[in-house]
Length: 316
Image 1 (cartoon, rainbow, N blue to C red):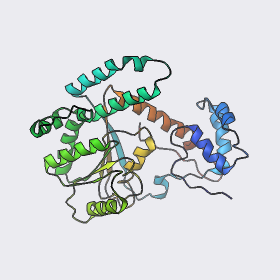
Image 2: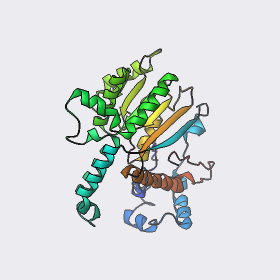
Image 3: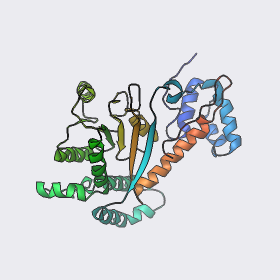
């Protein structure tokens, strides 16, 4: 007998599901090519039902709300924010400069990825672009807030959250953005902790313990989504801010779960910041499709010996 435990059946596409099921039952799930052909259009009800029958003998699924009924509720809000005038100027310049790459069909995939990355960075803060950050300290401090729509909104939120006694986790994909958030916290004279991929394991635990300590003076915790999204307990915070989203929605869900877990006594509020009319809205549409796909394939699955489990979508 082969027994496998996993947090998510798949995180991006059905190929991931096939590889897992092939490991469990290579006889039934033998050919990836045949699987792809059979379930190419998984939106069809007949295909969904057929896939459910194949999965049912192998899958026992439980979600957090079924086994941790004492947890307080959580709520996610998507906050759309306008780019600053400087961000709009740079955004238009990036699109104009890369017009041929963006309109070319086929090829140049690496170039396209680079353009998308530049746009994502710009949506966070224009200082993320090479050569934009002022060298003069006074000018840097002046422009730090006023040049980023997201950081302006974050500033208003953080002031209110601190006054109301909340403690905050802020997640970003980018170490440079975490550096800017550190500069912001230092400017506000707030005490904080930080974990990213460069922080060794032993030091991570020291910082976590310092944040979780009784009567801790740390107001916020700055974390990279991947390094600070798994295996840690930060239930002493009751507010999560996703400053910029991950392509993989499950990475963001795991980040949210650092606060919404055993030991939490308060309602958890999650705020996702999205810049209006940008690549970030396109990313959100794509991640929603991934979550819908999982709901169709797994969330609606009924096995004979378990009740139907429904997946509560965080990205609605």
